[in-house]
Length: 350
Image (cartoon, rainbow, N blue to C red):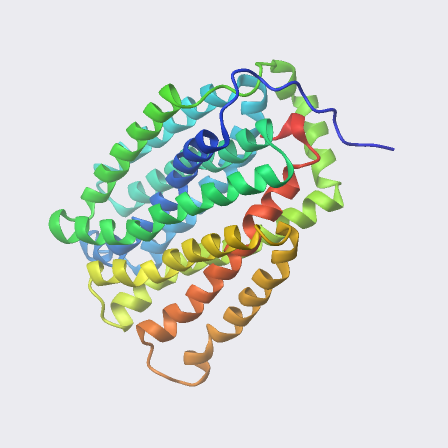
């Protein structure tokens, strides 16, 4: 029995591969940038609010929670309402949350604002993948996702440095001003560059239709296995984001600006991995590059705890070296597996 839905007629006008990559890259960037630009300010916020490291780490934990919940909501909504209205709605949430964070009087207000920011920012990743699936399949989709991720890596590579400079010059509030400007840019890109790729169909977001869609996805072994690999891989990167600021600034002794430079080892390696993957696709099918990426991730996973096991004082290289290897490995399989997971479900790409 064939469970794959019939492919819908593409909505005109179509966007070129390059335009989809540019729009998708900018949309996707809001989530990781909002995460990474915040990290240099975390140690300062401990003193600014007279709180603990554990409380400040909750600003990232709640951000991740909002980011995850968002994709369960905005994806299905975009299938029924359209991609552009969904981006407008969720980026509106992000914009409002950023203003709350800017004027937050206590750490609890910052935590709440970060949760709402995550809820809004999740729309970027969901819409970028959905738009690619709306318009392209197979190797074309992998090429676009690879280009999107290459663009994506530029933002997070500069974000800790921008966050560190902003924090040193104007305090932690300056980071929220930068994120405010980023939200405005994304709304303008959505308005003037993004083309709607699905027809409005409210029947897709009826409770029964949503339940059927999620039951189909959760019961599909191919989809679940293809989704779990990037889920755990990216989850580890997010987990690192909560501890690296305190390790590199409090233990190693880096300033916020130097922390920004150190974090470029992670995002720069991710960019390098995507460039190498793009070159590899000229000789091999993208699926053949997956084992190489998984092997690098495995090696890095064993290297990360070595300084602790050997009872060594941490250094930038000892901490960030394995993180860099891990990032290269993830870049080799993330575009292919993400695209493969969506492939059989064109009418529920969101």
